[in-house]
Image (cartoon, rainbow, N blue to C red; front, top):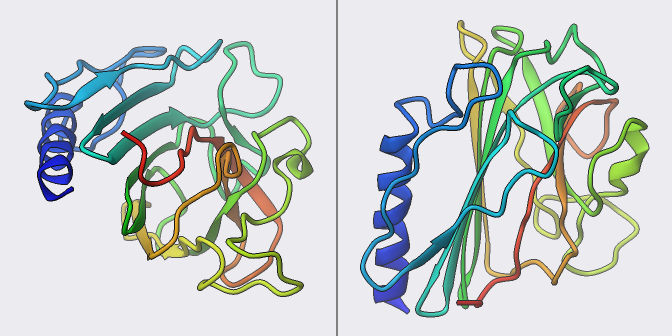
Length: 215
């Protein structure tokens, strides 16, 4: 397991360098960043972003571990260029803002990370993993993903990625859990207008999260 995880981390670093220092997609409109070569013993593929030319995905697996990276550029629903990253409130998440989500999963658990660029400087945002893909209706993403069904929201049973942006409007967050996602159970991240367990849905990004322990 350790060898597989090490190979995936090496691959993740290689892809991050290939995509540039910010870890996002190419700055060219609709462009994709270059992809790094897989580490020894790892398999990698680009699953594609459907009809979204601004999207970049990478996935890899080795030794019972799996790594995923998805990056996109926000635009409002119904934009001429379709996007899997949708902003419902351009005052909080401007069109053209960027997001990158990563997942490293193995039999011991799951680590989810997020990096964002181009948001409102010095502002607190909430963000959680949700159960369904994004849609034109903010409610399309469904409720928070929960490890076990519960009537209340909390960061132990859910994946919370609350963050505060810096003076440039950039932010990052990470969550680590000893459990993993169910197959097709986690499909997106929602950015909320405030931190905590609730808040208005300001933006959504469809993410191909996978269950832990696959490879």
